[in-house]
Structure formats: structure tokens, C-alpha cells
Image (cartoon, rainbow, N blue to C red; front, top):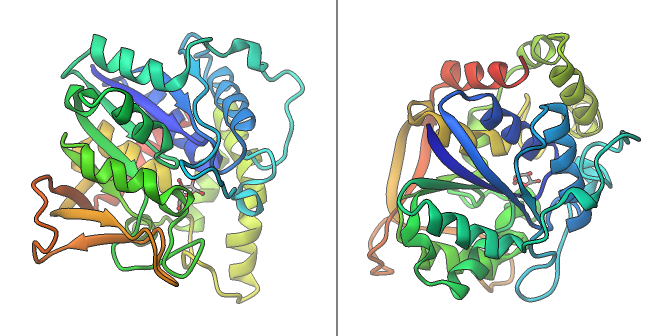
Length: 318
Ligand code: BDR
């Protein structure tokens, strides 16, 4: 089994990505660390515990991490994911924060990577604050990882939060900059455009969420809020940030970690993040002409095997 750590800012698509990992027989989840992002940190932690409860996997340790960006600010995506991050459909029996591990998420990332050095991959689907702090605390941390999978950034300067800013990178550009500079392990990036290009049809979505299982009912419930911004707007002929169809961004990074064959092509190049600029703060920069003279190159995902991806999505709700 491939051992993975997951770092999330648990909104709806992070929940889906976690469920995908838990359903994959080839994967063992060693722990889940939380970072403020789509919703404030306490909600993120509660949401992860809620997902684990639905999947009957509360045995997996969950750790609280950093709540704000490195510079101290933080945006949320409550318009899309709901104020609680999971579509505002409360579960009165959800596990409480007392179920969290006492250890801090950053210490847990370093400890688990050290214990499983060279044999553990990390999948990060939120702002990269915990990862940036981990490499500052332990500069050897990235070398202990087999690989890193990130959902974040953009390859054609298309933003979803500002004109050029994708949510995860824009939430903490300094953290993204540190990670893209200092992580020399093989790094795979599922950008916003990669997710948009590989979106699924609403016909497929309807079949998927109406599978009748407890997990499918949960996903249908938590996604209902965000469909206002996608499906309903689409019907009303409004402009939709990601274009028409169903996009579950974080699942593309998780799918690549589970089965590399879900990605059909990559762009291999050095990448960085714009830290200033009037319009472009948080935008990912692809260096296709070796201008940055960086040794470490990333693999920016460029093509998706939709059938393989759909199979993983379907398995996650069975
Ligand atoms: C990313 O932003 C978040 O809202 C999603 O969870 C995903 O990680 C997409 O830009």
C-alpha cells in the first residue's frame, strides 16, 4: 500500500478527496492535518472528523494546524462551500474537537514523514501554510517525502478568486512560494485549469450522487449549496468562473496520488508564485525558458484520463 498524509482546508471537494483516498485499496492514510482556508480552522477540523465518521474511519488521527496565512491574513470561500465549509447542513451527531489529536499538525507532519522516511507521499488540497512552516522547522522534511501532490495555482493565469489568483495559492502566496522553492521531492501540481478542463457532466453527477449509499447521500447534501454557483447559474445563463459542468478540484490531486495513470501528460518545468503586482499576487508562474535557474522542476498536470478519474470518484461513494 502507498502511504499518504493529507493536508486539507476541508470544504466540499476536500471532503470528496479524503473519501477517495479512504476508498482506495492501494492507499493507507497515515494522518490528516488541517489548515484554515475554505473555512476557519475549527470548522476544517470538525469537517474532517465528520467525513471520517461517515466513512467509519475515525481511527485515522486528525491534527489541527495553522489558522491564518504566514502574513496573518486569511480569506475563506464560504460563498461557495457554505459558512461551515460543508454546505451548511449541520449534523447534530458530528464528532467534536475533543476527538482531535493533541499534537500540532506541523509536528505530526514532520514526525510521520520521519518515521516513514522515503515511503510516504503528501497530498495538499488547501493553502500551503502547514507545509511551509514544516520545512522551516525541519529543512529535511521534504527529502523524507516520496512525492508531493498539490491542488493549487494556475497555468494560464486564470484565477477563480481574483483575475489571476487561484484560491489556495492566493490564500497564502508566501507559503506557496516557500513550498515551490524548498520542496525538492517530486512535486505534482493539479492547477485550477487542469480541474476545469477535466470537469464532469451533470448527467454523470446526478447518477453519482444518487447511488443510494450513505456516502453518496452525504456528498449530495454537502454539495447542494455550491450547486447554486455552478448548476443553477449555468441554467440561468450566467457566467460561471470554472465554465459549465461539475468540478471537484481537490479530487484531481488525490486521484494522481492514488493512480498516476489518471494523469496522461505533464509539463515539467520550474514553478513559482507572484508575491506582488497590482493584479497578479498569488498567480503561479511557469518558467518554460529556464529564466529562474531553479534546479527543482515540478510536474504540472496537463491531461486527465477521465474514465480512470470517474472510476475513482465512483468507488469513493460505494
Ligand atoms: C481550491 O480552492 C478551494 O475552494 C477548493 O477546495 C480547492 O482546493 C480551488 O481553487
